[in-house]
Length: 390
Image (tube, rainbow, N blue to C red):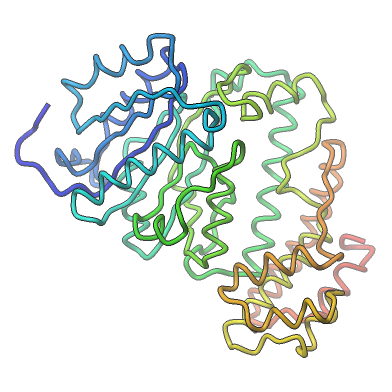
């Protein structure tokens, strides 16, 4: 349905879909209601929706086609039968984003690619908020994800409690990182969620990083990693929210639904891989911030006093001085340094770690507010303190 004069295409939303007949209408309703941050309706043609129907056989295509004639934005529907090697979350999302990128290129070669999921409902200003973040200098934007309240309420009580604990501890680790490795383009407060339910990347950046990584699982985190490897400016925007389902039977093996179901069945299933002991998190964040500053000053070399302390082999360290961008330097450092190895956490550890992280944050906030630089000696005393994180 055309509201009048068209506007230049500024954004293309790519949605990979596999048998989502029951969810697609709600997803499209949310996209049909998109507004400017002022509340005005987004002009016709300023954004488009691309639905990639991957091996659907449940009538999803009928739902999509029925909406197309009266949809308040250009709606493209691509039906395909992907081979087993590509018929997974990463393969479908990559193809959807690639097609959306071609659409933007044909419309002028600029703009922002966005992606969400068919079982999710974006906020009314979702597109506008992502565009605004990019206009402020972000190359990519990650939104915050919330479980559907009704679905969340039906989950077992132990899983709801676990979710609160993981969220609390995750927020603490994110703030520690913000203090020890501040990024001007991603000021505090922010989150650290990387979910395909709410991601945006400028067309130029998408091409620069070579597109979405071809991963069967975890393609959303893979995209964030690829952005980091190219020193792209990613904003983890707390004001951009998307509601997603908390269903137990999903479409992508190993996805959110499988994770929720596993945690329902096993109360001690390992925590999110981003969570780690406070001691390791503090070391990781301080070293990343420290090496980032040295790298920006072009003073990073195998002879730097900092590098041997990471227990990195001298010959391997020698290569670091010639590596750019910093994202690649840090990837190598994490791989080479034994002191930065991650350890998976179990839910029973979280209450103790939350208490320890609370003490650490109080001390870090105090020092950060004072404007003093956080020196290695302070971190050593913090890590060794019985009062702190011992």
